Image (cartoon, rainbow, N blue to C red):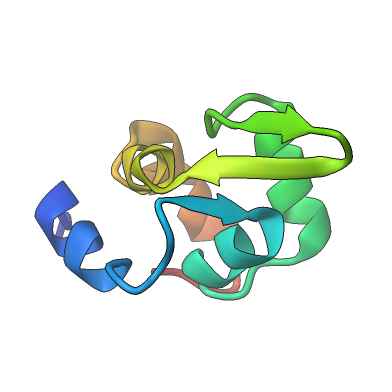
Length: 81
């Protein structure tokens, strides 16, 4: 079953509008730090890099988890949202 943006907006409602890499990892079910950094470096998730911190708008996380890439990629992940 494909989950829509409304589902993820409700799921992530307790997260701030802009999340850190640690929060991003939690949102995706506790993925590894290296996996999260790979997704960000490959620009799969829109983000800002300020000083030494990745800042990811929650809207961009929702866009990513509803994308075709995530639909294919999540088959290889041990955890899923």
